[in-house]
Image (cartoon, helix red, strand yellow):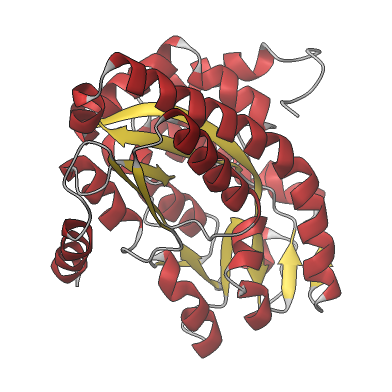
Length: 328
């Protein structure tokens, strides 16, 4: 299946003009909400600064799942990728932002990415993923939807939860008692519909954009992860550009991601209301849920992360205490 997807993607991309002015962007994010805002602003800015560029966009996993798209940008089959799984694939020992319940807000995530370890993440992306880090935008906290309600770890036990293909998340949710099922994002709707899985965790924009709420009964405010999307470019493509072209693309990404982050806060409130209006029952986990989960989470995180990374993340979080809130 993997080879078939890559071959199909290559065939599609070969039909585009073979020049450095062809910019192909691919992602598994749906073409809705904040993602749509970011992509449209990015396209608008690139069209103004690079009027000869042919900009092609493939969203909602139309070229494959997360891992396939990470491979495509690494190989240069696509020029720009917007994704979340690259960290788990290339430098899981460095990326503390993968740890559930660790970061209280997106501002603390940004501080971590701007730290010395964040700089190492960007170097590792180039060396291991052949990709240039261009920026990030906030999508909101990750929630859980389910056809079986849970408020405590005891109630979570035995529920079949779809996980992205991120080993640390699989390990942690399994440790919390869930029956974890790794599954590419395009397959989640049918998995929920057929009962292969009972639940999934995701960004609110993905829950609505992929219509996952249509096959779920409960919206559970776990808010276990500050979710963001990383925008990156194939490194060979990037290095072959003229200085002015690189500056134009970086400026376009900066403008688009800033707009997306600003829009995310209001959008998440609106999406929550829309999902509840559609008939899902909102559940607030018990206070003890996070307290009981953290020892399991910290143990798993420290075992995966390079020594010092977890503590550096905690320090970056503490640095924001009293700083006046997150990026809004």
